[in-house]
Image 1 (cartoon, protein in one colour):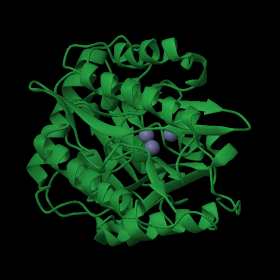
Image 2: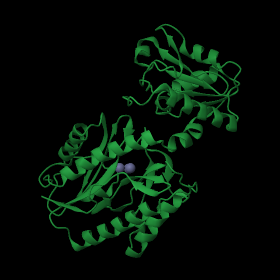
Image 3: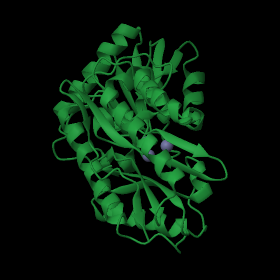
Image 4: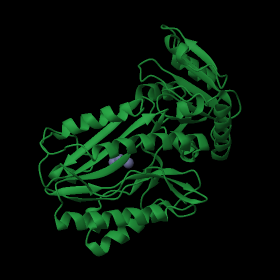
Length: 369
Ligand code: ZN
Ligand code: ZN
Ligand code: ZN
């Protein structure tokens, strides 16, 4: 992961202190972090997904220690936010971690940690109780600071540029896979470091929200869901725009208008203090009079940051209130199996001045050739 130059050790030590405060409140002694986004959030270092263990031991009362394979140690940023303990090829990293966690009884462990390591730690620390680290780190990571919002905005503008370019591109006669490859290429051209996904669901395939692009040839009369996202400076983009090959039918146009209205209302409802589930409910209430409530088969959104999907989840049952700095998608969709599907997605940040929509490419149904 390439992090921007602004990310210095002070940012990470401040985040580690907030984790310690949360550990104190939760009555947990230490957090153990391996692969996944919690580690770069707290150290600026992203672990390789390897059979060699990388693990940050962050105690509530003590210094952060990063246990890392010797051959990876040169990749760890040297900004003093943690002590680095490299282990050589034949050493026992589980033994090193359990030594650092000696006397600890309650541990939070990163949700993405490989099971082989979790099981080894559990048998080496038979009296320790393990819990998921996300309950500590999720709420902290959900609230973005100004630099993180700037990174999300830069990533959003890059996918907006791609969405605009696609409006003057031909779709008819091309396969979904071909259009998907073009989305990936353009996301990289616009400065993303890696593409994460490029869903192209044409005609009936659009009724499957996470459709994998296939060799289906796009033809006149199709509507096409393009949902694409990538990572820039460590932070994710994610947007969905809709395309129609030729003038859409009245049914398509009316359905899209209802969806776009529902999305607009939900974005405006995403104010500080509003329960997450209410943003979802606003869109459902808007779709209901059009007979579209049953076609909206997923939650309206997910948080976004270092990961494409993270807290807060904007879904019925999440009564937590939005706070300033929450960044999340607002993406209602309607799906008609065997016929077509539609979705419209923007990333929104809740701010004290109201919802700040990071994506600004046109939201109409783009008519393409
Ligand atoms: Zn999705
Ligand atoms: Zn998306
Ligand atoms: Zn999304």
